[in-house]
Image (tube, rainbow, N blue to C red):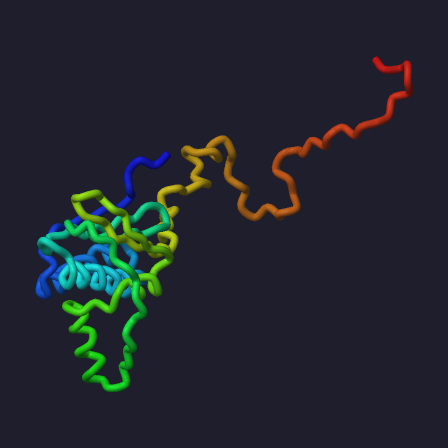
Length: 202
């Protein structure tokens, strides 16, 4: 049974536009450090949406905690705030990046105007809300993590064939110039099995 996550990070903040941008960069840096580069875009967009919702809707304050947790092959991103009201997912607003300037501005506007939990649902494998009583709630989403890349150990230190030690130490050197078909030592052929008539065993 696994009792601890393999990777975990948490940060507390006020969900203000300037701080949301900082948290995006922090989450991105941690995922890259954990070799989860392929998840950076979705995780950053998801956490931006959740923090934007806190900025726009949470009462009585904007204090919250962002947590990222990698357990086996699943990354969970969650935001906890102090507003006990449960949010509802709405249809996302249309997003048309045809105009390059509008597309660039739209990315920057994500810090202050989240497009709703529908975006979080679209980019994640699963998401949900966990009430915490009068203390608030946790909104979370998960992403599937790629399998870890296991480094291949170099075999330079495992030299078999040395005659001084190791499993081949008892063997002598092969004589130079001897044909490969000539055995060095006599080869003992195994005894062939022969049938024994019944009653004559022994």
